[in-house]
Image (tube, one colour):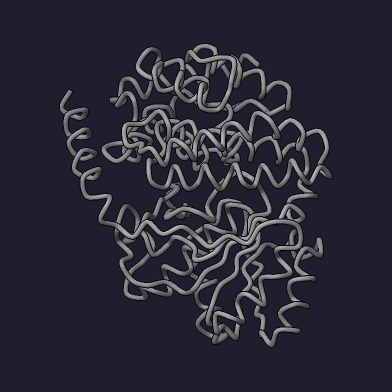
Length: 398
């Protein structure tokens, strides 16, 4: 009871002061070959040296060739940092920041999935605050300095990180995913080019698409929504149900790829203002402990959380269904539908959750969720453990 009262009070204060913050939206470059147009855009902004942040897979796939050629044509120097792994660590972000400083770059362009974009944003925070470690920037409003000019070009349609004020970085020594939230981390521009997602395998298309769905749903059913965030979530959900199956079944369907990039972006705009919830808190705890991919974990957990919320999220889900044009509305129908999508797209269950780990997992998830996330139901330790036990039982049976 005390935890709920404190959390609700914290959230009420934060809702009142939110309108005073710098809620800028990234400039968007959209459509096929938008990446080719980016160097001209950067040159017009007065930039001369780009730190290109990516991973080895994207570099070796040749997705950067056209961009690097266009940079040369526009008089831009390019330094490449390709040392980002899945679920980037504090070490990678600090190494990226060091390359930025030593190279003399004056802007950052991140080309990759959520891991690459989060690493680039965290590197920007390290650059802006050399006096603080990333652990000391964990939480909200702890960067508070201008970061380098940053452009993000997602190669997956899921995280929406190109639109958000958050960066998720793993402290591997503590097995903890840390979330850094501050307005300077909102990217200055986003490139939504479907050609960058064309080669994404079906499994990753499915998992990242369901990640975007989770963002849109959690933002909508929480208690910090606004008319604008609700519209963004409705647009995201409508596009996901219309186009994710198409993108999954035919990666060359560029209309579907483009629509999914829009969906992930709209979901990002929504949840960066309205926040996520207990799905993400549990997913981050499980991901840090067992290395489960984030999109897959969200996809698998979402039905369990909606069923636990029950009637507490019924009105919000009904409005979301109506706004997105969906033929179902109750929490049970939503959970069943997500379960069916996971099955149809072969999203693997979360095997191997150990019973002895659950109390610690629940504590870690609670620390993330409370008091910040304006969830329909504030979970105490007992309820959070119940969620993990339910997930363990349900996933091990599959």
